[in-house]
Structure formats: structure tokens, C-alpha cells
Image (cartoon, rainbow, N blue to C red; front, side, top):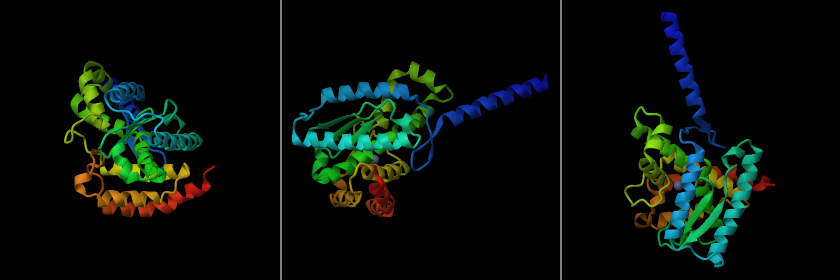
Length: 273
Ligand SMILES: [Zn+2]
């Protein structure tokens, strides 16, 4: 009897352990282990719905305008290089279901984001800071890095876990579609008012800076442009700091980190196919 119970308990422990291992994954390049409990398929579906609804409610700059063309061009170049690199290095599953889209919206806020599935939006308000294609590649590389590193899924997993308590996440998501949607919108900073945004963790921000430098280098953009861009953002002062930068590492720390990573990124820049 006792040994049966022991076996039963061991069985449960093994199942729990396997579950935990399966719900963890490794971030490409940095190798950081992360928690990933939200199924990618439901994320892609939610992303697609929210992306369509965002585009229908905002002023999308016509694809024929030079600025929208630039966003498209830089985005495609990044996507191609990133997909090739990830596929060659065993991370192809991270982009297997991506259907990349790049849109510029007419909005004064200095902002940009990338949802799961490769759905990218750049706001016209960031263009004075990016200035040229290299500067734009810094921002788009950084935002795409958040998506590839699945930072939103990580934040959403953490938030839903708190709300679900002991309940299985899959069941919670099915039974509480509104809470799930709210968690998604907050995790991806979309449509939330300032203050309601979940702060990006510093760890995630640094990781997006690091990966973003390598991604832009792989696409043939000189990563040194990141120093110029972040210096311009830093000079813009705190009043200008957009929501996507909330709780970012301090400007000085970020610029110091970028300086440290540039030699590594330059190797990718010179070795790209
Ligand atoms: Zn960021």
C-alpha cells in the first residue's frame, strides 16, 4: 500500500518535472532558459486578431509612401537574414509559422513593436530619432528580437500563472478569454494606456538590445548605428521616453552594454553569407 502510494507520488513528480522541462526553452544566441507556458498556436491566433484590429483602428501610412517603403524594405531584409540564421542554427521552429508584415502608422508616439508571427508596426513618431535605414534597423532589430526571444509569451506566462493560481493554464485560458486577452495586450504593450503597461524586465530589454545588434549585423546594417540612435534617444530626455522604453536600463548603462557587444556583432556583420 505504502509503496503504491510512493510510486504514485514519484509518478506525479516525474510528470511535473517533465512538464517543467517541456515548458522551458532556450533563447537563441544568449542561451538563457525561459519559462514558456502559453501555447504558441494560441499566441499566433491572438496576435493575428489584435494586429488586424489595430491596423483597422489606426492610420496606416500607404505602402507607396517612401517612409512606408523604407519600413517594408528594412523589415524584409531583417526577416530574411534572421530566418536564415535561426534555421541554420537549430532555432527554425521559432519562425516556422511567421508570416511577416511591416506597417508604418501615422502616430506621434516614438514607438514600435513586433507581435508573435512577425507582425510589426513602426510609428512615424520614432522616425526623427532613427533618421535613416541603419537607425530604423536598430529599432526594428530590437523589437523583432523581443518576438524571437518570446519575451511577451514569457511575461504573459508569468501574469497568467499569478491569476490562474493552482488552475491549469490551458483551462484558465479557455474559461477566461477576457483575462487572457488583457494579459496578451499588456504583455505586448498594445492598446494599453500608459501606466497599465507591464514593465519590460531589464533582463529582457538587455537581451533585445544584444540580439537586435546581431540581427541588424546579419542583415548587413552596421551595428555602430545603435550607439548613435540610443545617444539621440538619451538626449531627447525623459519627457520623450515612450512606453516601449519604460523601465529600460538607464541610458548610460544601455550605451555601455551596446559598446561592449559591438565587437561580437561585428563578427556577424563580416561573416554574413
Ligand atoms: Zn524593448
